[in-house]
Length: 257
Image (cartoon, rainbow, N blue to C red; front, side, top):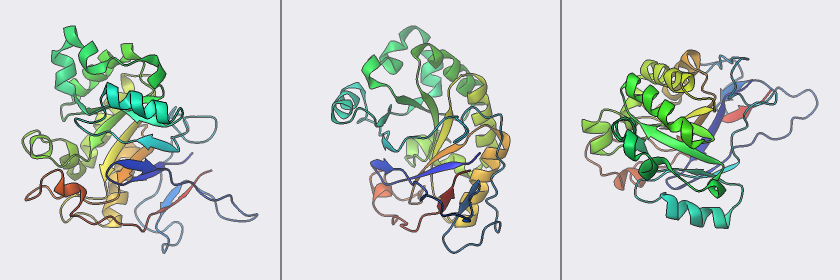
């Protein structure tokens, strides 16, 4: 069992694959910075063998390459183009707010329908209401997405400000764990979280590990897609949040059992 972590730039994500282990080398379910000794620090993977979304053991294997979700861009037309370019990349929808799904039950095709050739495809939802996240996930089941993803990385004022979700959820990993548990309980596909390395001044490696650890401890989530820069929730536009906070190129080491 392992936690799979993917590091993302603003538009595209590339998988971090562990090198093949040499005889006698250490392999374990852990998330470690290059300079940290194994077993030290807050990021201890509380792996759950029962998780259907686990990496390894024949379970869900996170994708090698994905086309990142982006509002006003990754709609059906864009995804069709992306699928022509790659038959294997995982595609993501634009973020769909849970309340939109719940309150548009008679018009769901507008928000959730997609052609079969877009598989494998992930539905990204956003929200901060547990009941609505659960209901939205249940309603989306009819569309047979391959994974459900919760947005914990959008820094826009409408989302992280007035909406109190997106990147703001990183301040409350306990809630994110509850949300992922509710989402997983209402679907039969793997679940994942997309987040930043941190928010405002809470952007240390230890705080990121604590966020991951708490979400894992409360839910079957084993796949985290990490945009490798922090979000600044005041003073910057969404576009500036994709450029002004610097990318952090020093990435954790990931080991699989």
